Image 1 (cartoon, chains in turn red, cyan):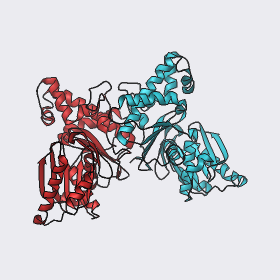
Image 2 (tube, chains in turn purple, green):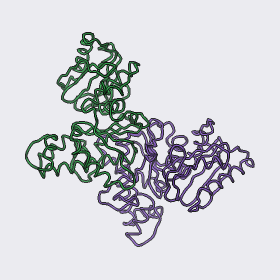
Image 3 (spheres, chains in turn orange, cyan):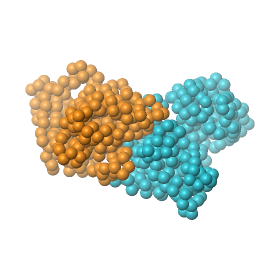
Image 4 (cartoon, chains in turn red, purple):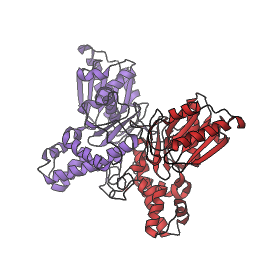
Length: 304
Length: 304
């Protein structure tokens, strides 16, 4: 199965077999414009490599940023200059294989649901904390898509009234405080020193500016997660994406922030994804197996 | 069909036929404790009255406040002193008829979905603005229940940081500003004059205190509705309950508040429920027909 994760920086592809084993990988920088040609080239190279590693590339699963409709058309992906791009159809035409395209964060949601922290959980929230912030919401075992294919935008809840301007134009969005990009930007603005979110996490406890920026990120993210909890009552919240790699430095204050506010309900368990950066690509592989009509026991993949 | 709406003040029952016509009604004050006995008495009186009006009471649908699990057990309803009350089972035993119990706001959601503003809408939010505030959320045509049967609590999103204390214990909840009770309480606190929310709406434009209390209610409610829009991307938002009777005095500033904040997405249409206070009871009747396995064309009821 060909699984491709289209990112703003790189396009990462893998050949994943029915046991969940990655048999080959391909990676290419994301051109702009023209990213769709690179997606098809990466997929074609993986298809060509398949016989040599003893697999059969039966279908293609692609996860993309932006707004992706249920028919596999990318309605808009600003960072890729895509608008109304029929990516699933392009992949089917180019490769002669069935193809499925979904939103990258919903792809990560499929990954958690089928082979990650959310196996068997019918009401689940997967919050991806990367360059931006969005969530995959699962209700009654199904991913929520939304009328305009745009559900899950927890990053653009304006939770700090009068707060920092977000790239979306609103003030005080969760994403303007708690995304990897926001943490780095806000630390640099305070100190004049550039640092990645990962480096800032390493400074916690010994650098008052890092502590302050992190505390504000936790406050904003806590309000976003609390909104999901109040509206959807999930059994579990999974945190994924680069910022979630902070682990307990994220989980402990986040749980404290939410339980300190939420007086009227227990906060559901909040965990860090066991799939890391692979969640989206694993979700794409699961969807490709589904698209091909091949039953697959993805719950066993992590043992593979 | 016997449909009963259990409220904190009154218990209202109706005999509803398959054409949606109300053939008889019963109403009783809500005792505390002992409301469950009154519910069963109201249902029994309606069952006894049915032959006289030419109907057959095939099943019972009840909507209740509190947390109601999918098995018809009221886990908790603070205002009724109910805890772990197996209301569906009690009704089946007392009446010898199949019974179904659901949360009152989700019952109103069923009403909107099957015979109100939401017919045919697969992604819908119904926000009930009464003494309290809660919502029925519909995803892919199905009501969202939540892992703990507590989804939809938009009233307890803390949207005004450091704001007024809510009955739930949090600060700045939507409900602490925009419910009928909050509007009345906040106006009285400002002016020393008691007034109902309905009277305060009548003062708008000529009473600066009414205008101020209303504007703050709109701000809080707008943030709550915006959270629903960002997370669930509904095709339509329906406002019900007593405060929604304000009509354009509510809709116009609310739409303005949301579109003034929401920079990155169109706001879906927001309308006032055409069912008014009947939404919950109509939803209970629809659920009772479903429980009895009788197909019913509820979409035609409003023409009845």
